[in-house]
Image (tube, rainbow, N blue to C red; front, side):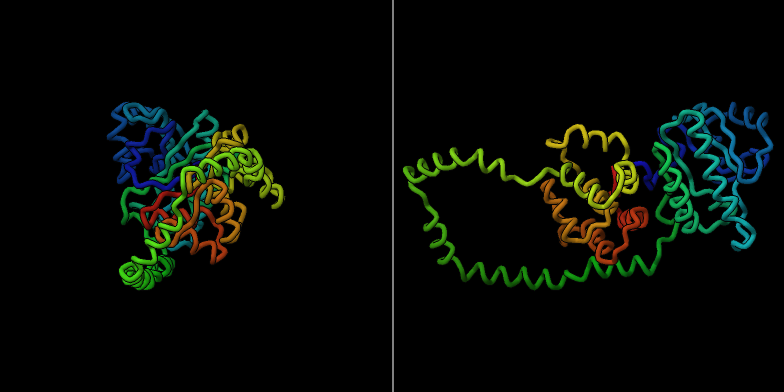
Length: 340
């Protein structure tokens, strides 16, 4: 997927470039900056001295040295002063300049930290939402794999209100499920004779099976003609119906160009993962019935028995089709993210 939130130490990322949040002098001062410099080695400091100073909101690129990343993109983020001193303008520039520099240097993948969220005090939850917004807009015009690295669960605070709503929604069927389960046990104990009668009535003799086989063989070709359209053909029909271009659709679905090309080149045989199929349903803003119909064409369904499915159902019923907000919720509940 073009934009992914992950829990990972950014110095361990195997990408073309990682982004380092530093100061104007490009001298390691704390947090991510110190960790990156330690991982890259002493030669990084020598190159940074030649490139300094670094303007606020600007970005400069160096080699990755001993890190797995080929490049390190250094940016100077804002100090949080309550949000009334142009911090968001500077923060946006940090992300945009870093993204442009990555593209200009031929990078196919780049990993970001939550810029200015450490020693500079920018609220982590605000940085995450801001980063998602800026990066997702950039990706509408560029093909690039972007990771936002969240080092641990305490690195940002997910909306407490939304977390509570989703948690309630996930748990609302538990008592009902327990009641149904208990009733099922009682019914199964009392229904043995009826089940035996049903099974015996379904027995078929060998001659009858032979006759059925002939009939089935003759009608198999007709049956195959009446099969529903594959996932790919249903998807293309929906894209046309909603007046979207292919590019607009796969970008909104957080799906990369390569995956969409596979769908177009193999419409009869391509079978998506659930997260990819749901991502397209979200991009197309399908209601729950329409989503289930699209998923069914790939042999999939949304069930209230799984946390991932219930979170998706929650957002669809709320008519909230912001795929990155959905992914933020999935990330908080340790579920796989939408896209591919």
